[in-house]
Structure formats: structure tokens, C-alpha cells
Image 1 (cartoon, rainbow, N blue to C red):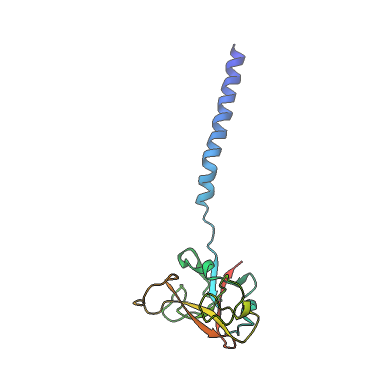
Image 2: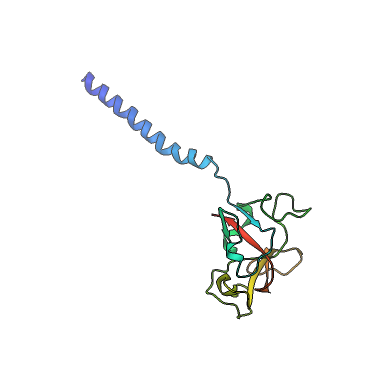
Length: 162
């Protein structure tokens, strides 16, 4: 009988330990904050056919949706453009951006044109910037604004960490 009570006590201790680990492990993991991904707007300009290779090692040309929510990212002030009033955040400035659509350079529609997937310097490509004027009309991509630029133009590139 004493032996059964001892085995029961050992089983209860082990069960309690397993439960504690199972409950606390996710909480401990969640408390270890992972560094946010970095992104930047290149300091140099690139033509449409150069845009996809413009980013530093460990970064790639971003799609808008990778950098859309800037509050979950960290702007890399060492690699990117910095204006006098941008502090540690992103500047207002246009840069080439991947669209996620099929190759195109003649639709004349921001979000569709992409210098044929950034392979040519003719036609047009999509660029985005954070809105510089805060009284502009909001759109589906707010707070970002977009314009088309000819693919032979030298434009900065939005880059995001791999």
C-alpha cells in the first residue's frame, strides 16, 4: 500500500511538471521578442532592368505587401535614404516596388506595370512612397501613394530583409 502511494505521488509530480512546461513554454517563447524585419529605400537610383538586383546582400526588392505595415518593421537607417526630419523612420520618397502581378510595362496602371518584371528599360514601372502630404485622399494602399515612372529612369528601390 505504501509503495502504491509512493508511485502515485511520483506520477502526480511528473504530471504536474509536464503540465507546467506545456503551459509555460509558449508564454516563454512569446516573451522572447524577435527582432523585426528591416527594410530600406536605396540611396542610389537604378533603372527598371537593374531594380531587382539593387538591394544589399541579405535583402531583396520588396513587394508593397511585404513593407505595407511599417509599424511591424524596422527602417534600416544605415543602408537607406534618411532625410533630416525622418529620424529613425522611413523617408518620404518614391522607389521601385514589386507588384505581385504578371509582367507588364504598357498597362499604364500603377500596380500592374513593372518594367516586364524588372527586366527592361522601356515602358513603365510602379513606384511607391509614403504619403508626403497628409491631406491627400486615401486609397486602397494608404498610407502609401503610387506613380508610374518610365523604366529608363534612375529611381531608388524599396528593399526588405530576406
